[in-house]
Amino acid sequence: MRKGVLPRLLRQLEWRSRVVLRSGVVVLEGMGWLPPPSPSPGKGEGFSLIRLDGIGDFWLWLPFVAALKKAYSDSPFYLVANPLWKELAEQTGFFQTIVSVDPSRLRRSFQYRRAIRRMLATLFPSSRMLLQSTFSRRIAVEDWVAWTLPAAQRIAWQRDPLSGEPLLLSQWIDQALYNKVLETPTSFFIHEWRRYSAWLDDLGLGPLEWDIYSALRHRLAPSSPSSAYGIVVVGASVSYKVPPADVWIKLCTALRRYEGVRLYVVGTAAERGHAALLQSVAEDWTGRLSLREAVQKIIGASFVLSTDTGMGHIAATLGVPTIMIAGGGHWGRFIPYPAEVSFPLKVIAKEKPCFGCGWMCKYQYTRTKAYPCIREIASAGVVEEALSWLKEVRKAT
Image 1: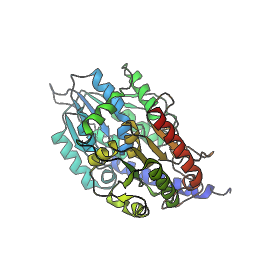
Image 2 (image 1 turned 45 degrees about the vertical axis):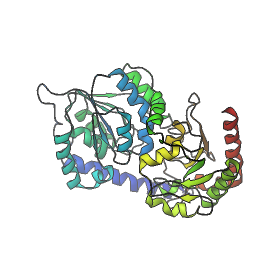
Image 3 (image 1 turned 90 degrees about the horizontal axis):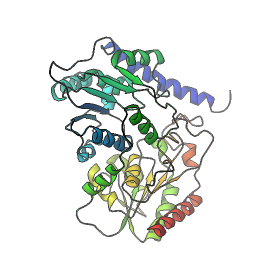
Image 4 (image 1 turned 45 degrees about the horizontal axis):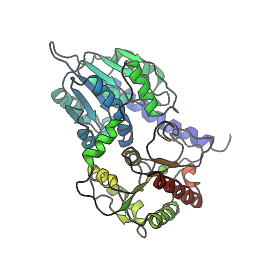
């Protein structure tokens, strides 16, 4: 057996086993064979939307929602949201009702699912249409929530073929739960914005509404600007996306010298260990800011240095020059941006033939350290590439 094949097969077996188990459990609890609730007679208006993945997924989804809102400006929008970014959803002004649901607890706890079902029945309004617009939707998360919500009609888009859901089970759920499942590009390598454009075409609506980002920059901008500084986002949702410390230190040192500014590390309290590695070059602000405060800090920055994470996408789309160090797990789906998009994002990566693996690395089984596509980024080349791009950005402005 070729080197790396066995670890990859073991990883996929472990991952698929968890997916099958969690999907099967919610089906046994009634999903799929008990009918979802319908609106009470005379009730049901507006649109229900479900979004329970990460900060970056939500943020890149916003031009799609803005286009929906523009087309249906008189209709109320209701959102089931991940509590990670609920406060940012509130800033959009799109949603009449926002209910937060923890997807991790939803997958793991029967008691939590029961409590959430009762809460949604009490708080969530009936709608005329539920739109399931998450490509990598999960039976035990997004589909389960769709099953609990009262809606006259439910529309979903074809799910990610790499989601790991059992094929026959997912097809059965789609037929039992949704009135219509629209076929759209299912390639893993199509950027999310292009996928959203295709979904809008399916609905007969206009293009993505990019103005949402400038509107959010205006709403979230700090009330009083401070002296020049740079922001470093050193953490990530998973350890295998975090580059080695020597890459960070050399980059931070060079950028601080070139820009002549102080650097601040932002992130959650859980990321203090990463920030501690940079104590000689950057001040640690991890765990000190709410998400909204962190975004305000980013808006006031002269540049952002980031891992492949949602905060990097927030920075770039809000117009802050952003340097993102990335691997290839989701290459093409979130980064790099389509050529026609002009947000100031520089992605630094060492492209490899295995890019697009969905983070199922064939070279490394453990997920506690950076994957090879991250570790093998040469620190000297990174510094030169980052400074060259930032100089061009400064010239253009």
